[in-house]
Image (cartoon, rainbow, N blue to C red):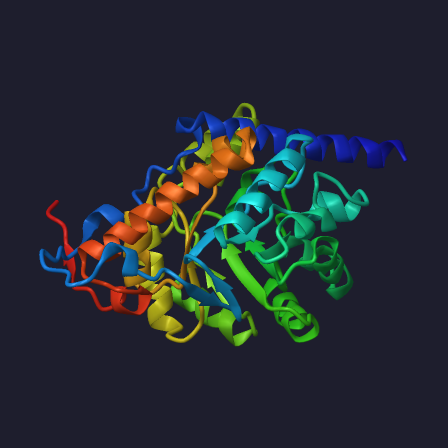
Length: 349
């Protein structure tokens, strides 16, 4: 029992370290630009629409959203997480957005923790809500039972499987044997009654990997490209000596979000896509939608508000949504379907 308690305490400490490092910003930021500044939506000086007419409603995996926004996975470990999860759930409900919770591994293995309970569904009865587990756990022995527990624990509409091999390779406690990962994903998609979403954690999906995941039965993909939080650097900050030096070489690692989004949409023309990784504001979201995303997501950019209050999270995303709406208006796009046909220009270097 003492070993189990020690492992639980270590996991809680790791999650708290993650929050502290991500909040610090500079230490965890990718040295790779996400790519949004390299493209520009063509301005329309005669939009012939009213701003109030712009309709941002989106449908994702059968769920209707008031805007094409996912509040993305953050954390599932420390005591702070209960407060974070409550604030995010209430904000998702108030604004009609989707919410993906942080990893539920600790909650699964420690019998419930960090506010990852049915209370989230009670606070967000109408929101699209997604559970979250790591692919590495399914290589190590997790199966459909653990996946169902994660989904049922919060009353989720689907399960996000996060792919984080580079993070695990740097993390002192990381899972470094990924043999059989695709086979495990395929088995899970066949057995689980809710949709499975595959998500990178900040280094991007290639077209080839995206195609393999789609062929394995994944219902949607989150490209989670380079340009936002770099989880190799985060784990390097937690390490000492050689571990930190190993991590430093990966500061500019990964497929930039825009490049990943373009490649994945080309390889998988019909699968629902989420764009995350360095999405700073509503204009970046508009560009992501134009480039082929169905939703755009933020995580680290929301963390400070999430630690503060539900109102702070609502205020944050209200601004993001207003930016997205103005971007549609200023391109003459009445809705998201029209936004996808707005001329796209390459920005000057």
